[in-house]
Image 1 (cartoon, rainbow, N blue to C red):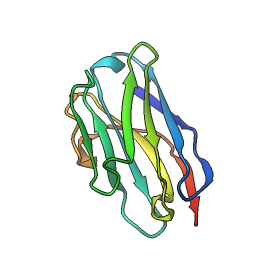
Image 2: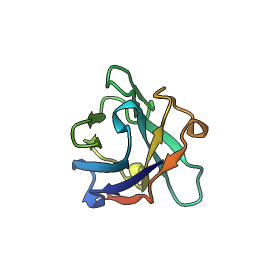
Image 3: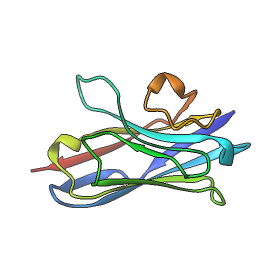
Image 4: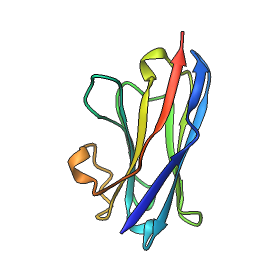
Length: 124
C-alpha cells in the first residue's frame, strides 16, 4: 500500500514556473513507476508525465514536452514535476500516481494509487 500527497500548486501568471512535489509513504517506493496526471474542469483526467522506478525512462505528453520535467528522489520517496513556461491551458488539478510494476505507462488505468491532487492555476 502506498499513500501519496501532492504539494506545490498555486496561482501563477503565464510564463512563470512552478514545482510540484509528491511525497510517498509506504513500502518499496523505489520499485514503483510514478506519474503526473491532470484534470481541468469539465474534462477527462489526462496524462502529463511518467518516470520509471529507476528514472531511466521518462514519458511526456506532447502538450508539455520541453516545458515540464519529471524527476524522482528515491532516498526521499518523492517525485517532482518542474513546470516552466506555464500557459493558461495548463490550469488543472494535478494528481500524482504510482504503479507497483514500474512501467512508466501513459495510461491512467495502469496506476493503482493516487493522491488527492493539487490545484495549479495559470492566469493570462
